Image (cartoon, rainbow, N blue to C red; front, side, top):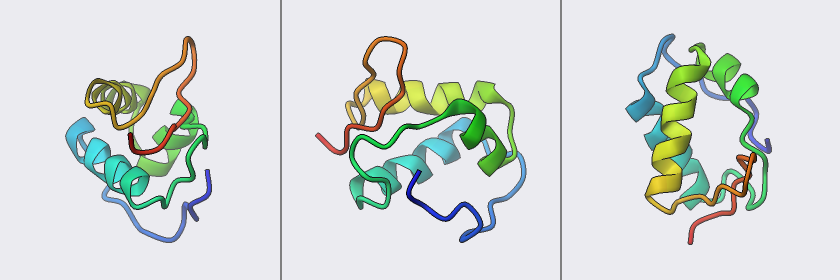
Length: 80
């Protein structure tokens, strides 16, 4: 990930919709580089949540075509 995980303090226990919105904004503003991996474990630590809301947020991003999901991967393919 290209962002400094300590740059912004996140409220503990963010919901999937809030995480989705944050990641979507980071993808669309190119804060996250196209092709940068979106790691469930790393994101769960970053947002202080379990992996379930992370999975839901990543699913929503994929469904909205904000990111592509190659088989078994959560690579960020940028805005498309």
